[in-house]
Amino acid sequence: MGVAGHQDDAGDPRIANEVEEPVALVQEAKVDLNPTVIGEAGAPAAGGMIVNASREVAPMTAPARHVEPFPIRAFECDLHGRLLPRTFCLLLQEAAAAHAAELGVAVESLLARGVAWVLSQLRLEVHRWPRAGDTLAIETWPEAASHTRTERRFRVTGDDGELLGQALSLWLVLDLERRRPVRLPDFVAGPLAGIVRSSSPARLKPIPALLEVHEQRALAVGYSDLDVVRHANNAAFVEWMVECTSGELWERHEPAEVEVHYLAECRLGDAIMSQSAPVEGAAQPTVLHRLLRVADGVEAARARTVWRVGGERRR
Image (cartoon, rainbow, N blue to C red):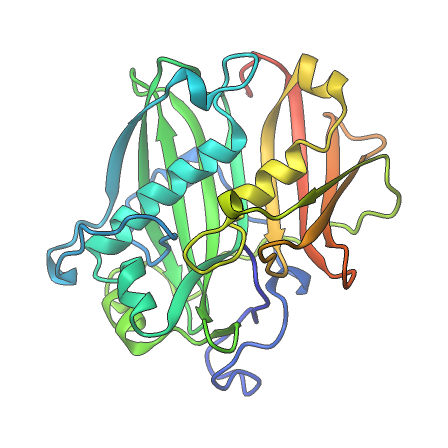
């Protein structure tokens, strides 16, 4: 789930206690997700999510990285036997939450202080989609933390160590009363200060606006979409957007890249319109997506998906 947030930079006079500008709308530089970069030794991160985080331990005993196995069951897969995109994102969140707990910045710790982790941007690259019967190893660590954002990365491997995918995520801390992003509280920033490799989280390029609509689907936010912050979980956003693509694309292709910029919350009962259109002239089939809150016309998220012929490994 995304919320408004400022890009940050230390000493920026515009950043007081609140973060004013939407992260996704600020000009940003391309991020290299080359596996050799993501696989380098790094440090742990603050990015957790709204899931069970009962394994909290003292930060000084926390490992720099967290690795967790996940067996893939048939009910987590689509009609082609591939792991559902929503479930893939939920598994990343689960690994992130477990690591955040080890670092002493668990979901419950933040909630007790009236704040919560929220996802601002996500970029997922998949070289081979996990299938029913596979067991994934998800490795996660924090790469950077500034005054307002943390960057968490992921590396996903299969049973034999094959690199299946990687992801980059950017997180904010939300004030639950004001529903606004704020600076990282001291109890979060302190444990991270000595373990992240950089004070400058990655910056993703803005996703272009959707100028014309080729596909659209109406939906409403239900209870099963909510997390403990009482807004739609970011994985629900992913499902709503990737579902709004042509049947031909789903039948013959699979997502190779999914990038989402979260711009606003969606709450219980909100009417949502998921819209998409293909990008003409792209080297691979590429689709732009957006989610609109129908009542006020607010754009809740933008996404870009890149597809390849199903079953082909990305080179």
